[in-house]
Amino acid sequence: MTAQADDELWSAIGDPSRRRVLDLLVSNGEISASWLAGRVPFSRQAVSKHLVVLEQAGLVSRRKQGREVLYRVEAARLDQATQAMADVAAQWDRRLAAIKRLAEAAHAEANKKP
Amino acid sequence: MPGLAIEREVVIEAPQEVVWRIITEPDQMSLWFADRVDLVVEPGAHGYMSFGDQGGPVVVEAVDPPARFSFRWNHPRGEDPVAGNSMLVEFNLTPEGQERTRLRVSESGHELRDWPHAEKQRYADEHQEGWAEFLDRLASVLAERQPG
Image (cartoon, rainbow over all chains, first blue to last red; front, side, top):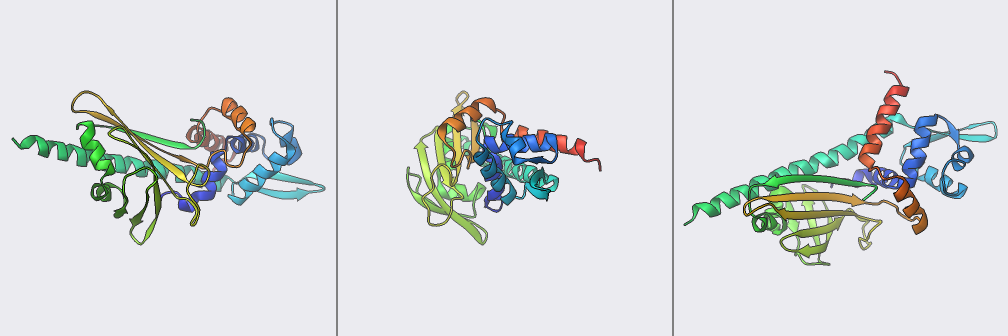
């Protein structure tokens, strides 16, 4: 079915707060959770929770540097996400085109009858 | 709606009732949608759609002929599909004269899952752009940052 395989991606990107976190990661490169928490209007715990979801979806990875954990965006996975969304849109375009064909044919057929 | 929603539309040279039939009659649905559609188009009805050897349950949400039809799908097995665990597909039909219909479809879901209302609202207000614009922008920023 459409989005089942990309369930985690949809879920991860569907949330505006997580998009905000992703946004900051993309524009700032490698950053820590506490740096992020200073720039968003939600709690440090919320930031951590978002990062976990993003990491599970493969959109973000982390590494330890000294006592800090740094996060960054996984560009390839983000590309994949973009593609997955585009695929769903294309699928609906195909279905709408089929509905149009069927409805117009049915209407033409009905018009032919006296 | 801010957040995750795909919206598409098409203009069809046929009256609204004809388009409605194509969209909601299971034998017609199997021509444009799933290979097999097992569904009674009534609010709350549970059905099943098959796509080749795959398939999944569907639950009808709104049936308002000939203007609106919606259902939820892609929810976890064994759970009731509600906002937060499934995708909502909505069809809206608007007549444009006697023989022309504008058909709009949106698929949305999963957004704002498990988050307190105040936070959702603040973010919805602050962050109006949809996922599509967001992804486009992120992708272009990434492309600039990572040559090759």
